[in-house]
Length: 430
Image (tube, rainbow, N blue to C red; front, side, top):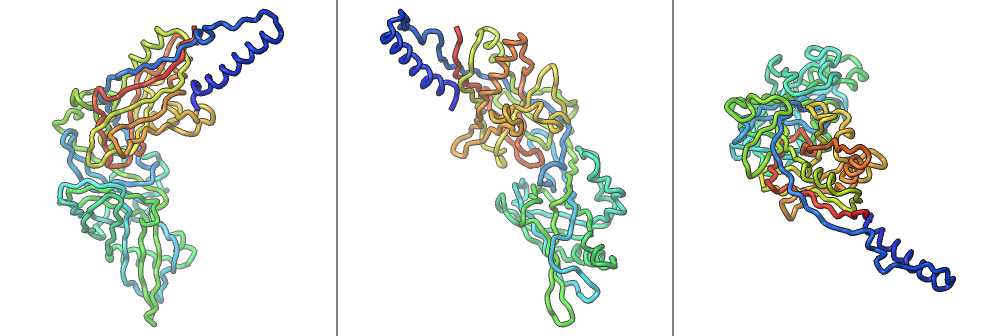
């Protein structure tokens, strides 16, 4: 219940109690007819200016997905992505000298995809020796950002995956027999069961030369796994299960030549259209929302209490829309930069109401399925800004940077302008 909802049931009994006390005791206490005139409840809506901001940093090792493949964007150029995931034994039989290799089934749980070839996908997949290519596990020990690693050129192609994607959340399956034989032989080079159980390689999945599709793969899903099939001399079938639920990164190469973002530096602002702004994380493109109308209102309103506040962003329908958004504070005191979005995010993000008490939840602005609107409650955030001005005569949060809930994804949205609105119900203290 918001503050306004609490005021009514508390004030009314209090007034009745005072009137009753006055009549019974005869102490001259009077109840004014305008008892409620000391406060007023009002509504205000602010249309917030939006533009785009470029943040050229994308951490790809902190979420449960990788992106792989290639696609072109009508505004920002093209992207080619390679996903790297640590491969580990997850269960089943351990390969031994008494077993013979049969086949390997690779299954990938998709979150979303983009295609310019009717859903046809052609990817290369290879298993890279961690000890050879990644001494001391350097790939995953360091924080990985965009452009830091590109390692697939260091080894030969192991297998080629060809399949057709027809829908998001699809599970694709492919017999990667060359890859399976490679892993089987690698395991049998290890002498003890203990060594085999600790087996770990790096799986690299990247785009073939003629591929025109890209995928986001959910690595933590139980559907994303490998199953290696073997048999012994008596034709008994054995299987070894492998998964990718450990370390992972995505390496992304952008080709932005001739586009509006080609020569931009981090935190540069730019405009694509007066009708909308983009949120497109793989290109480093986010929306920047100005809070100046709200700030001006607070500075001219005196003491107010925010009963309820909602931030609403209208959007149009794209092929792979973002399911929910987060808003990060952009201000003169702290600023916001590539790493700032991801490091100690709670110090920058617009928190949920609960977070102002337990500091562990960020506010998600969810795209309602029955409309093209992102909406979320920002009551405590706006009250925090009001208190900041009352106490310090200054509000540090001048803008909000709009990001997706997941950065490593092919999702993208456009916020319609002037479709970003801040709606507040407030009580003026007189």
